[in-house]
Image 1 (cartoon, rainbow, N blue to C red):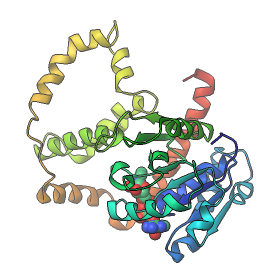
Image 2 (cartoon, rainbow, N blue to C red):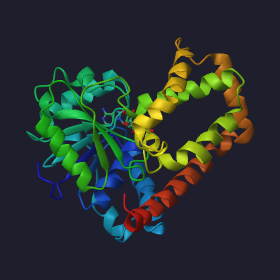
Image 3 (tube, rainbow, N blue to C red):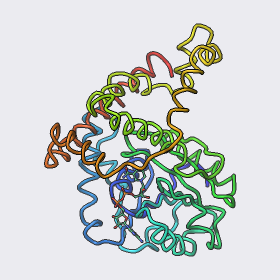
Length: 318
Ligand SMILES: NC(=O)c1ccc[n+]([C@@H]2O[C@H](COP(=O)([O-])OP(=O)(O)OC[C@H]3O[C@@H](n4cnc5c(N)ncnc54)[C@H](O)[C@@H]3O)[C@@H](O)[C@H]2O)c1
């Protein structure tokens, strides 16, 4: 596969598949979408159109939205969607059974040598590609939602994935403006959800102990740690937070973090009672009826942040 404007098939057109279509189409690739549910196929273009028009409003695409949208076609069969494409992005339901079934079909109908990336959030590719005859071109390409606003993509090979296929997907993702990272081997939750899980588990534990309200725990991230995290990760953060860098930081604060880790040696499931308490606090702040409105607000904030990051990277470097 070259990084020309190859055709891309998006298989599964829910929240994430619709987002992927925007990623590839705005980068100039012809996109063919297939979903097995007719009502999803009928409704997805309206959602995509609204997202592309929002991107234009925030100056995140140069082209006229109609030019971007004209690159996207909806197909009523899987075979039509994948014929002649140079890459397939699968985004069907997150179950081993559903993924296994679609990979059996993709195995035989996707042109030879074309890589197939799965949006899987945590199921490793080895769990659903083992029996495929062409399994060496299958890997995880896990995005963050929505992928056209959050560029990270985790590339995770199965033990049998050809490294050249990982390189090809890395090159394609970079060319379309995403930010791929290579996860060297399969690990449950990959890297993103393991990091998110560590933070979430600690947040639930602190709430359960009554150390702070859910609102104040959230604030600690949104107006605290999160500000730096939007442009640097935890290692670079601590490298800059001690006069002589990361080793100096580890000398000063390593014992504190070790002691904190020792205080959490028995991981606990999030209990029904605990979930109900957090749910209660959240629903007081935001009624269930307003969740969609707040999601739209979140996406507009993300667009504003993406626009700011684009400008700041140009002016200040990355
Ligand atoms: N939602 C997120 O925040 C998020 C983020 C990253 C990755 N993911 C992953 O992306 C994948 C899709 O998630 P989603 O949130 O878009 O789910 P979703 O439920 O919104 O969409 C899944 C779509 O797949 C379709 N589908 C199911 N089986 C199919 C088949 N055999 N052929 C064609 N279409 C089929 C369904 O009709 C549905 O429209 C999952 O693996 C998920 O874990 C989700």
